[in-house]
Image 1: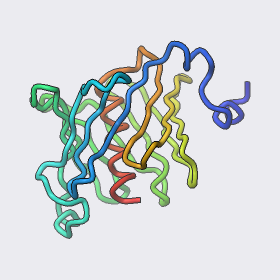
Image 2: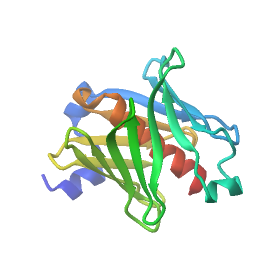
Image 3: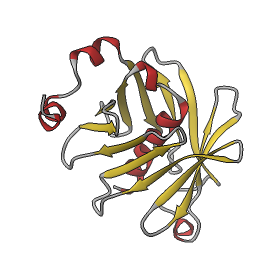
Image 4: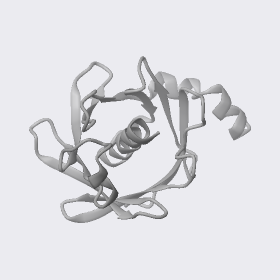
Length: 182
C-alpha cells in the first residue's frame, strides 16, 4: 500500500488489534507537568520541567528547563535537555549517558526527528489543523497519536515491541512542546 495513503487512513487493523495503547496527559499548571498512563489509567511515568517554572517565563529564553521523567516511585529515569538553540535540538540522557536526540525539523513546529541510542530513527509529523498524528521509523514501524478529548491529552498507539521509556518520553516531550509553544 502507498505509505501516504496509509498515513491518511490511519493505523493498520493489525496495529489496532495488537498494539499497545498509552496516553500522555498534561495538567493545567503553568509549569505544564504531566504523566504517561497505561490504557487502564495506571501511571507509568511522570514528567515535569526542572527547574519548575512557567512555560512562558522569560528566563526560558536564556536557559530552558530540562524535561525530567520520573518513575512511579519519584526516581528520575530520564532527562531531556537543550543541546542547541538554532536549530532546536535536544539530548535525551539516562544515568548521565546520552540515549537519544530530538530535533525540530520545521519552522511550523510540526515535524520532529527522534534518534534513539539503538540506532532507531523516527520522523514524527503533526499536520496542521488535524487531531491525528503519525510517526514512522526508518524501518517502517509506526506510532499514531490522536488528540483528545482536550489538547492536553495525546492517545498513543504503537507496536507492543516499541512500548519503552525512550520513545514514549520523546513523544511526551514533543507533546509538552506542542502544548506550551504552539
